[in-house]
Length: 297
Length: 272
Image (cartoon, rainbow over all chains, first blue to last red; front, side):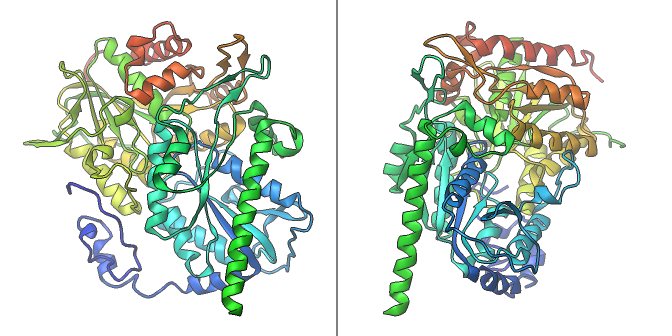
């Protein structure tokens, strides 16, 4: 067993099967044979498909259960509140499921016939599904595509980055909670983004303090024992987009499939979400105008 | 499903193996694994913890063992002992990382290979219980772990959830995984089950309520108990302290002790 795990160079990299990290991997012979060497044609196809998608944002975390999906859903709700954010559905390919006229969703959840069905897939099959989601879903004209991911730094993450490589991802929003047990995984996620050269829009510290609905006093359910996201962001030089406190109504709204932002417009959590969403929009608009300047110059 | 006879090897001295699973991330698998191990140890048992979460190994920190070195012995890798009496030991990919902030960016086949090695090449010695902490989901790591452990006939799986529907939705799928892979579900633990405000003592359902017990009822599996949110528990885990020993008065202590006792009661006492 090697002392230190090294990274998989990727099945289609020039180093596939040949790198030091490939020793001992069950796929080594397959990769070394050059089976993965030719670039996947899907990458170009996805680049074409993504031309009608203005901004692509990945929502990541090293840690599970910090609120990636909750944040993704509310980022989508928040952006969709602007009725000018539009989608035109042209009718070819897989259709996203529309929650509002201008808010569509695609998820493997829609493909399962029962709530008890388990997706017990190994990496290669998961990669295939992700490729289909990116290549075969007809998003039409979309201002924002938000990609919610599972926790970790594995097949799903590598595949999304790989398949969107030619289509340019605006950046990643990284979610954490305040305690060190989360931060230690999130530092790895930031390291991963830097390795694959994915721009980081910023970090959101979720579940950051709890205000008792009865006495209105604040407590720390997940204490920031090592300085929380603020110190981590300072150390790693990434922006802190904001802190979202715990509000029992968030979970309730997610369970009912509703927008918490509409249900509790005055909650400190709603105000935090809106401020963060605005910063994300500013980042994306700035990036867009920088690109336009580059093209016109 | 026929279980092959266990080959004499590093798991031959392990009496009972328990997997801690959840479909959902962040519900407290590592927390429950750690506290269960500590509680079993306090009940006089010899316990090992195998942390097969390769992307997010949390257990070394929770037990104050970050930065410990792993040594080779003649039977393979020696697990890290957490106490002089060697009553609690741990193996995690966390010990193998040169730089703790560096991401382990591996695809499935390589993760599977490491998990197989963790199962067969760690010299656990004589253990009453091996608690196996897993990452969220139903993928490579889970299949590799179940397959590698199958010859040793694990006692079963302890499935962790939080009360709200989005967790229950994922955990239902995990129960299907257990059924399909022939893994017995020892029971469901509902974690983060309410928070008592330290200022006014009101109990608030931060992550909704009741889902875990309802799921256990629907799925026909035992409900092992609800563990409330407890900042003292979180702090203990952050600082690598023994919560079971230090906070017997805390709200989570009673729940965790009761769960451990149910596991002990469900464990056959005589050797197979």
